[in-house]
Image (cartoon, rainbow, N blue to C red; front, top):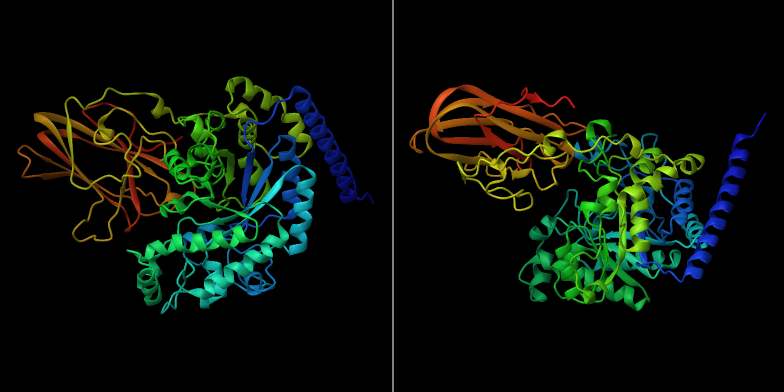
Length: 590
């Protein structure tokens, strides 16, 4: 009987040898041409918490990334989805915190299950890496010129920690808790003990401590947090986040390590001497630099690879968003920065978050070829001819096939949402918009004229063309999250009113549960002419709907109101059109 596993191992060994030879040859060529990479940090992040991936999978990625001179592999090892690194002093982190009740993120996280099981339970889903496995992986990467940088999340994204070590929760909280208590000395003992073991595994100069998206809601109710904030002279318990991060930074500095944190760490305006991984916007990079921190550019706009890379209806389930290969290739990490500011930019990194990415094949499909554009920018600073680079990637497909890399085929790309490519005439000269409930400052689109400017949104709610409205928790006084009036300037005949909405339940965006159109001639007395609603049905891919009223009425004022299904959920719209004939209404059948 043929031992196919043995043959595959031989093939892999030959392939690795070829990679190392290729890398050595390329390095020699670089020396000969006296060409140095523009950026010292050319990174790739893989989220191993939301779904566990084997060390064989990671070795395969290291082999391929090394070919393209990626030199940093950032491993997101801890989060609510599971704790993935053996810590000998705290065995429950992997005995319980590494195993959850569901593989399906929809059911486990969005559905609210969020329970953990013991290792060995027949229903347990998860896994973890032993310290020896990680040391071997680190050595494997080092041989190929890649430094593995571990991330241990704190104080937020820590449900798996507080579930297994509840003494790290806030005073009086008997329920689940996302954030470790920053006023509890036991928290610092725990974190320092964990980091001490992490440092012994990873020789990396950098240790990533997360520091992002702490909810802090339990801190507000914690008497110990309130007292600690008062003792430290803080105006708010939220300031304890910065206190925790500075303490951990001092600990790491004493150990000869440099701290990396996500850009929320800049909420502490005294933080300096760290490396900030910018994920939100360029403004965070400038702030980091002003405070004396180095920067790694990794913004959602160009570097998040859990976003769809083509028309969502053709793509596997994802978190939403839209980030094409060409968009990644257009990224200029230091754009708009002065020469002095640019000196603080270490480089850039592509990030693969895996909430909705369960398999190795899906992970590779989302990574490649977009991560190859990151590699090229890291080497050269920018890609001057994207079309040429794109063709060079396509020419590499036979090589990727030989390595059994599962990639997105650029030759089959469909492109942007058709409506977004057809600009309509703006109605702003004839219509004034009055907002009774404000649009979100996070999703303003083009502002007060966004819904009448003739511009339709693309596939992604983050493209700057969709305007977002968040449902208030006070549904009595503020029943509608979207509430606005169009002033036509004078009484006019109205034959139809069209409005477009987007649903992306992965981002908590839903079709309106209740949408109403009312009209008035004087702006005081309104009469409802249209009502429609959609049931709250989570979907795996975005929906785009076009709702229309048709009739014959006269009015000067048109009021439009929409309510999201639940507090904290969103309604998104891109355009309102008055008296315009368009295609069929309903859900877009892309």
